[in-house]
Figure 1 (cartoon, one colour):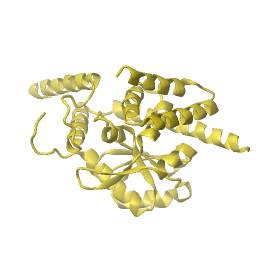
Figure 2: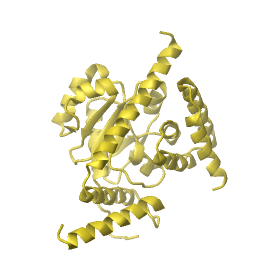
Figure 3: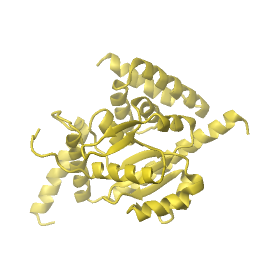
Length: 196
Length: 82
């Protein structure tokens, strides 16, 4: 690998921009998705920046307006209506990175927000990032092939106690949804550790 | 509505949210130009390096293979003046 100067990354810029913007709006957040996996486990391809945010449903217009004022652009024609219906606010950072803000209404998302880690990026900015244990639950609930890859990466970063917690939480949520699939995915990821 | 029903409703909304989001991401990925895709890959790699990644391969084999294929196509198109 090259030992030249550290290349600039729009993802770093976007994460810094997002952190500053949401903190100025007093909106709790935690980075999830590919950027969180890249920070917590190992780098992987990602086109966008994902974060879970606190319940802003009663102040959506104000938050969207302020984000726009700070240079974030909407990715759908009516971002307020879209977010109110789908619980996700779709914007583009001033640096041009798509940003998906998932409004966290479930108990496990709120727990994830409350105990997010603060990490320093290479840019010097401090950002809030979801803990591996909470990322594991999110990845177990998701159902894409790359989520399974991420899940295998992130359980490596969990302590034994965190793995047990992730499995208990996932099982309870999966049962509520009437499915075993998330539990099966997490168990498969945990099993892959045995051969590692 | 009972407390468990409310928790279940919220979980169903959570799952529905990601179904919508995945569809949006799929559409956006389809409309991305080759140049944008190459830039995205370079950027993800730069992010890893900026955070101290020193491994041989920045991404897993499948990602790496796609990266190289896209890079090659990009160079071929550039050479052909496309």
